Length: 484
Image (tube, rainbow, N blue to C red; front, side):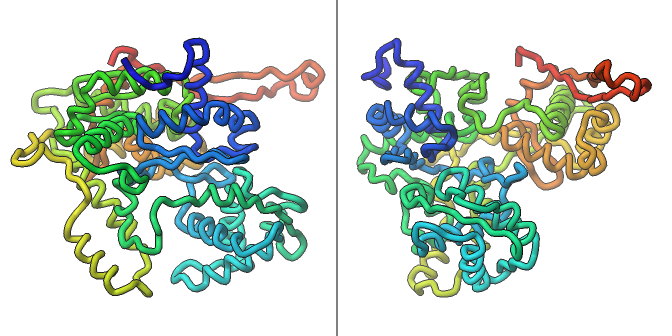
């Protein structure tokens, strides 16, 4: 029997699981973020949460009077949880750089700061970084900077005392904004588990069991493998057995994994021949839902259905089967892209040499079949980029009336965003020249869709003026096969 939530009564279990989902969904909780009730909910269960999150997942929960901060252990480099701008778009590299520089600049200010003064401080640091800079005379730079400040404001690290950041972004000569600085929240926002100045590769942020002070030894290694397996299921749409090494595979198949995760989160664990997934039908835990609303999500769902149908073809029309990149190869490729942006000037010579050695050593752990064994190569159906472009053109022609105009007119951008979403949901893997269909994609093989038109009749008082006019809105209704 699972020892998770031992101190929680059956009547209180649902409330406790709500607190678990809150802190997993929002690793930083403050008096106003994500809402005004979240911090009280988490603080009520803080002691039990600290025990269970460390024991089950290896996560450390740090609480103060005004914050609850979850320190996650990172096993992989995950690009599916970006920060978002005021317009709901993912942060680009410039905005991330401004966010980090803003945090550094706020550490040098007192209880309040004017937005223009803060921008000047960030600009003074940004100009020393090749290719960055911050020119407050340029509207794009001001917008990017305000996006970083707004991200901090939403979490309570900054509180607007007077003025308007939007007005300042529009005309800094005529507008200003004044912010109160919350030191406690500011410290909770940036709370690294490693000394960042000593890192020579982003992979040094991974394998965080030792970073959180967990003990060594065979028993501890088995415990850490169990934690890593639970994290893999919790943090990803699906944990494929093909991606797991021998020790991790045993933990993924263990009955205790499902029992612990289900009792901790209140969600159901689903096992299939290819892997295991934590099913969140209500969206109480997921940061990315699929299927979902919007043009990209709808197009991705329709594209998934077409890929799934192509996968079922046999004979001479069957798709070519190709091996997918291993988990270690994907990690190495992402690390290479990130490490290419690391500054090299000013590094201590010993660290630079260590970085060169680690670059040849490869990632911390390999996805293999174990020592002395070769993992059986698994191949997946391959669809080419040209085939995918053709399917998106068909989808746009048939359902484009319900799509956003900018994406309807740019099918290549729509395809790229749809494939990114499918890859984030572990439905496909992007490879050179196309994509590989992964097993979870079969869940959407029976998707059907129709364009639905809603017509709103004008109120009687306006009938005389708009006798021949109606206001129409289009949308797409989709349904999926419930039996994957």
